[in-house]
Length: 404
Image (tube, rainbow, N blue to C red; front, top):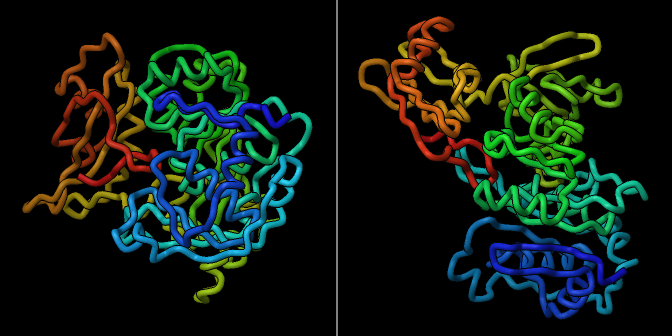
């Protein structure tokens, strides 16, 4: 059992079994308070060591400062030795440590958010039916979404296959070579893979999160992964996983009916659902997420996410939702993906700009793009600047980068 595959990273020729993981965790001498690692695997070993020793640990997606690298963040710990595979999942589940992850920083300086096991593993499922799952990792493991994949896989002794930061052809090959069954990714990542029109029959579950998944994307997933169930998850670094859907809208379950509401057109969640560090800091009873929603029904409360509040573009006093424009763009034949963002303008305040990735063999023009949009939206929503690019700019977490 210990020889069961744990992790493959073809980009550096790395293949590790669960026996390797146990051995390498047992070799760790000390656990820092903040860690950044050259490889995902090193981060995995440090994360396991922190969990089984109930030692608080913050995970960074970026290299640390000189003082941190020189050992000023090292903490002493009573270290548990001789970790065994039967002990692994149980130790992780019962751990009392706090694991810190940093917010993306897209709306300001990144903040450290600390989670205990209950919020980190809220959506983890363990049973015999998961024993043959093979997880494709598209996120950095120091992100909340990456941690979800890690805990789901390790809790069931499943393999993890790194797909993050690979080009599309390498992703397709890895899925086929390793018979990947489960993939969790942003809609931006999924759209890139689906644009190649390659079909993967081994995949039985596609989970999206972090961005809005529209009906067009769901249809594309059905074509590229014909045997896969689709699951749309609403989660955040601040709260963990909260809502699950099989479409583009979310129904609030009865157990959360008193804990989730809409305030000024945005989703608000009760402080009891937040990460440990945020609950401890006090504040208002409800935390307003900044995620704009459309209410589909009141009883039961059913929502559709429309945008992030900070993503709206102010064009001469008119508000433009970049998600709305992107959805119209990707519906145009020949557009594989699009990124809509605002650029400062001395006259209008901002102008709408976009980047477009063309599908293979497409020959689009800027005039064609604008003509199509003119049939659908007012002039102020039509991008003034249109650029054709090879790929969409993304953040470290895989979301579209809305910055200019």
